[in-house]
Image 1 (cartoon, one colour):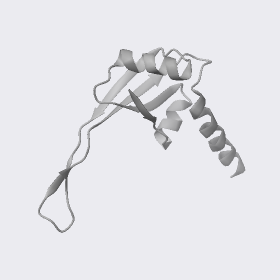
Image 2: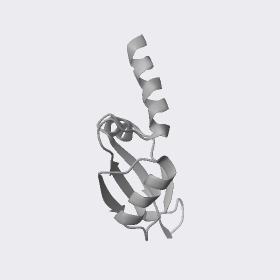
Image 3: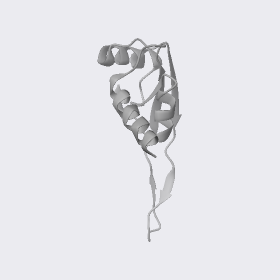
Image 4: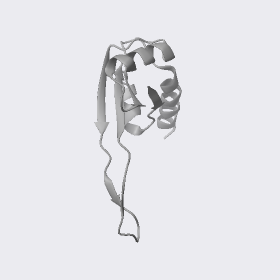
Length: 102
């Protein structure tokens, strides 16, 4: 159900607050997302929030046609204090060293 973690400025800011962002399949729900996080990363989430972004119609360049962008669903996973998800820790360490150098 979990397709990929989202690595962006917003998700890195949220990761410092113990909230991790993932792109999930459209038909997944909060319980299946929580079970997947626990099985993949070994961390039981304390809360899961879900956001669905509906695809938009976009004009194709030099054509009188439109295309539909895909609908995406994101999960914001909150983990208890003292716990973390392993993939995000490495990115946060790199960000902290870049901030200290400047």
